[in-house]
Image (tube, rainbow, N blue to C red):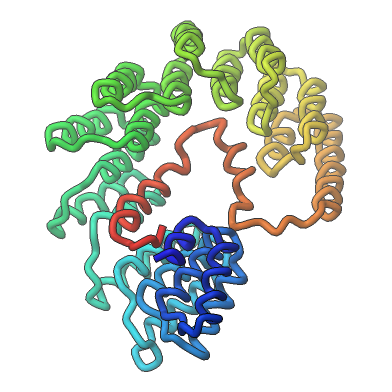
Length: 427
């Protein structure tokens, strides 16, 4: 019991001591003990140690259980060991070699892994394989596929297929479909699904509320977004900074900067400190309206408050100056990215090149982009290697967050809605 508790906490130091003590006392560690130590390493970011425990179980025993396989698959995925996860799953699929058949949770983890790796076709194949192998598909299975479809027609098709299979949509299903319609600017369909969800008596979770909010905000459906925002409070979910920022972006996307400024003041009055995503929404709004004076006013306010710009904000400002026929200032802001520690990405490079109109500007843009690309490569090569715990893409995710607070929340909901309930500590 103690070892299992340390495993769930990711306290591998204490787990190691208990495991060693068991050996000294003559107690042969069981599959449960081995699995707990393996989980402790995984939760503690020691992915190689976790894998070593698992390999030792395969070679010397005790025989891994279904829970052991569930946990090691998750550890491989979290640690970016996608090949190891795929190889292990293939072994489980081999009925001649495998000691057990992969269960629903293992299939879900593989779908999630392929989504994380952007291997969408492989995810679809795993989905189809579930039916072939007689593994029951659940609402979570369909949600997983819906979450990475970019075409609202495909999301709607998957939603209908789920219902034809006799499965009831949950709050995530509704949120994903609303989000797809919202991104496609199909406001009527998005609103109809929202009303269908309420009629079905489905009450959103806090995270799902934020996704619903984003679904309406992305297409500037202010009234619908306000309805969701008010519903959060009615259901006793306290809106967080992400909720406020998403609501703010609804005004921005509706080109209602007066409404955005009013809500920005409310955000601060309610005790929240605006972050780079919040300021980024306002900067984006003024850039779209070609109001460079107000755009820079917000940027300077952000700097004065100690909030550092990210690459998305700097790219927005660069683009705004370029579109205002001020290529020189656009170049200055392009170089500012490097100064701020953000080597310009391909998007920034493409924006700069698109802003260059004359032959001279095009030559300058190509030269600067090329030089900074070389500088960026040197910067990356000279960095001290970081042995991360599977979260190496967090910095990128935070930068991308300037356009949406909730781009990653569907992954959290998809996993927590299924694995977190009955996995025995899997997540």
